[in-house]
Image 1 (cartoon, rainbow, N blue to C red):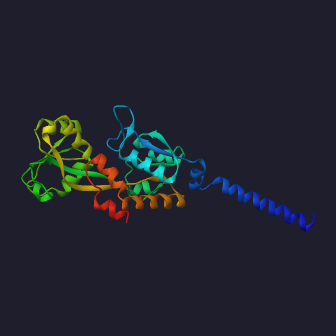
Image 2: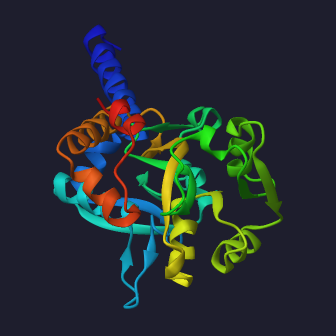
Image 3: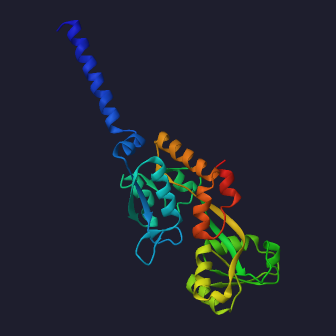
Amino acid sequence: MSTSLIRRQLCLLLGAAALGTGMAHADQLDTIMAAKKIRVAIDMAVPPYSMKDDKLKLIGSDVATAELLAKDLGLELEFVPTVLSNRVPFLQTGKADIVVSVFAITPERAKVIDFSVPYAPVLVIVAAPKNIKITGPADLAGKKVISTRGTTNDQELTKIAPPGTQITRFDDDATSLTAMVSGQADIWVTTPMLMRTVNEKNPSRQLEVKFTIKANMAAVGMRKGEPRLKEKIDTWVRTNLKNGQLNAIYKKYHQMDLPAEVLNAGS
């Protein structure tokens, strides 16, 4: 076999190997843009992040966030229904391109997937009627505060409650909710969603957010090893935090502005 023939065959083999490698790991951003569609995994029953209205239309802050993202990228949006426990597997198996679904950043999750910069919080709040003055943890001293046993809300309350705080723990959120609706309790460490449920069931209670104990960071989830997609979404999040679009979405559904922790994370 001639030297020139061997060289040609070697070049063909190297070219095929390179092509195979490229096909094995196509850039996900290129794939999404070529398809002109982005598949977003979302749990459709986590109000006010995602829920259906009386006409069965999907609405909520995460829904609106995904809609804005797809619009700004010039892509068709396809929602992929999931449940919270399946968010990571849906990314890893390619059932969805990204996740926008109350996806809090945790060290454990960050080992197996990537997150964008945060775009919203998952809040632990202190809720009470408007006529009760509470501006911070010190104001809880001497007051009766309820929480639900075994929850992260209860854990955070335990950390910040000053001496003299009278903590009553119920076994589930339903019992805590009933206590607040009926007026048996006035101060609840909970989430904005459950606070609003009290107001809907008994508008005379007029609960409001007194202060936020902790804001876990919610972000867009994506598969590891896709730096161009991550950069694209990070840039989009930062832009829409700065121009107020993401704050407007959050305020519409949560009746409060994004906390400084989120705004600072995106700067």
